[in-house]
Each structure stands twice: as C-alpha cells, then as structure tokens.
Image 1 (cartoon, rainbow, N blue to C red):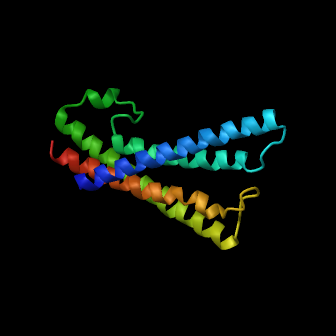
Image 2: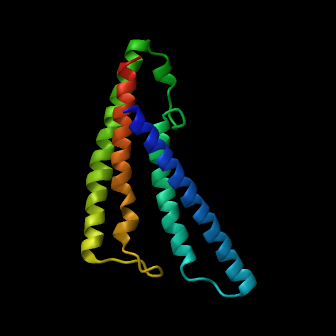
Length: 157
C-alpha cells in the first residue's frame, strides 16, 4: 500500500505541475493576444476555467493524501488522550471516505454520465463537458484510497 501511495502522490504532483504550467501559459497568452496583438483568443478563458477546475479538485485530493497540509481545526482533538485521538481520527477518515464515495464518485459519476449522454460540449473548445467533470469521480476514488491509507497508518501507531 505504501508503494501505491508513493506512486499516486508523485503522479498527482506531476499532473498538478503540468496543469499549473499550462494555466500560466494560457493566461499569459490571453494577455499577450489581447493587449499586444489586439485580438483576444477565443479558447483561453474556457481553457483557464477548465484547468482551474482540475487544479482545484486534484489539489484537494493531493492535500488529503498529505494529511499534514490539510486545513483542519484540531484544538479539541489535540486535548484528547492518544487512544481517543486515534479513534476520532479514524472516524473522521471513514466519514471522508463515505463523503467522497457518495458525493464525488456516485454524484460525480452521474454528472459525467449525464453530460456525456446529452452530448454537452464547451462553446469554444468543443470539448465534451463529461471529460471536464471526469476529474470529480476520479479524485473521489483517490480520496477514498488516501482515507483507507490513513486509517491503516493509524492502526500501526
């Protein structure tokens, strides 16, 4: 499980770097084409929006896997004895896995299926919107894996 975790973290890091780099290039091109060339590119705003969606959702899954970098209020948790703290952390991880499954995997999967079935495409890139939304169920599965990984780590403490 540790090897899978390491591979997954490195893969997500690579995708995040690539997406962020493409987003920067896209926005710079938008500025250049608008103010220097005098003609705005039609696809840049839409590409920036889609890449920001992917960057945000994938970044949330990545931070969930890092565990230490995730925003949390742990004041009450830190006051508990170690045994109870581990129990509460396991409950939190289980709830996160359930949320990821119900909302992201099932709900996101339905969203992807519906938009692909209806044939919805983006206006400028003519990209099927189901491909844009596909990151939601994928990251739901990733968050579920990270939750299980964190529970397993808590069992060995």
